Image 1 (tube, rainbow, N blue to C red):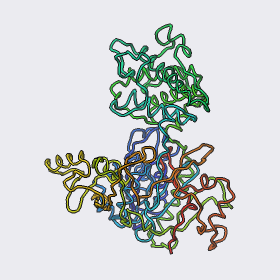
Image 2 (cartoon, helix red, strand yellow; image 1 turned 30 degrees about the horizontal axis):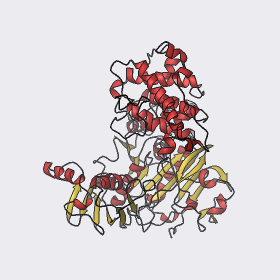
Image 3 (cartoon, one colour; image 1 turned 120 degrees about the horizontal axis):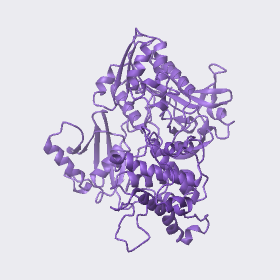
Image 4 (cartoon, one colour; image 1 turned 180 degrees about the vertical axis):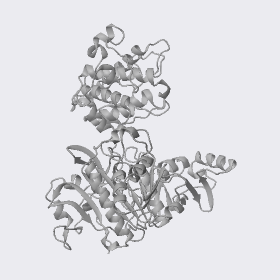
Length: 615
């Protein structure tokens, strides 16, 4: 009752956690969440009702709890935890921080603030029937970043553009290439072929609309180009198809001959719905139905036109969003037409949305179990009972009669650049690489710093954030465009960079190693960071679908142990608990690092991480 608790996230886990905290006797709770309530949240975030759609999750969750616990104090913040107001001093007022976040970036940020403020952190995540709770206490256990975290599965551009063999390849093509080309940033690089069949045409980009071209003609021309002509171009390379199934070009005249004859659509395209929807326009009501090629073609053309008719102001700035119905319809239809060309089975909109949004559908019960485990660990933290801290994994299937697998926390990783401040090594061509590339690709992207400061010796070459003098900001902007070797304090082989983020109170050193050549396929950034735990991808199977996960090792450890709930005080080899399931390292005890209520990513199995245990 005397503890002051900070809860970050009021979504799937957060709703259950706030309820459990209130019913367990906690009486001083702060809640931070940036999001507003959506209709799709209502099937598992039980503090919210339909009337709350569009309102702040943090505020509504607070009000819901106070109806049955009116005497406790809950302060809600509808804000981003990365905002400047939530600094180290803010975190210092709390006895424990509990995370129910939905993204890796925010998790890393909170981890660093907790380390700087020396406040214990209880981390969590769920994906379907899987879940985890971990405890992170500075100096006693590893921090959240001591082990590698997952990255989204990526695919070679040549596979996506030329030789797709899986439906996910078609989804990536439709989402990242076609959708982005038509509706996204026109200045962004795109690997779609933009040259028309007529080589003498003055049009440099076939995706540009002619001044006198009506919307039907434009839509049909784009359809024929991407599904017909581009496939024909690919077929010209006979070598490619020696050991592969040859794709079939698809033209609008073959799939919808009536549309060509009438120079427009032969169906009623009126749409009076508040949210434009191609399915609604065409009378398609079942998202779990697999559309025919003709239906996919109609959906694609209708979605195309609705974007230009109803959402024209957004074109040029759109980014695919799994919660954007029209975008999902367009991507589903485009992916299915491409899949048909390459002999890949078609999928329903429901299935396609899951693939496009990396969705593993949430289970409310898992969230409730994980919330209970968070509170149990929080109580241990408040009692300073560190010998009984546990990382607990919630499994989908019993493994040797275990559904909840407790594992002792690990000691801090001595090579962790976040909590152990170990120097990093950056291989880079200092003669051609600009400072901007190092900041964007390494310091911000890989190291997760938001407002970095870069020093070379005693020379400050870059600082980010508000409050800079105009001449300082201009000088730093000039430095960004300079190659490393031409900075005011030149960066050469053996130079040491000091990088800091004052908001996170994090500092690390990067030793520079000059290197002339890089493998474009394996080292696309043109630089390689060592000493930083890069994720390792592998395919896993979850709920019957292949998902992407990351693991920190390819072999199991042999000395990992776990408490056996059936025999208190007894420990058993973790391998023994897992060996009965064929793919248990993936589907039974994968470490969950993201809970987006729908969208999740998986981290490594505790059995795959061989480290010294907390003594």
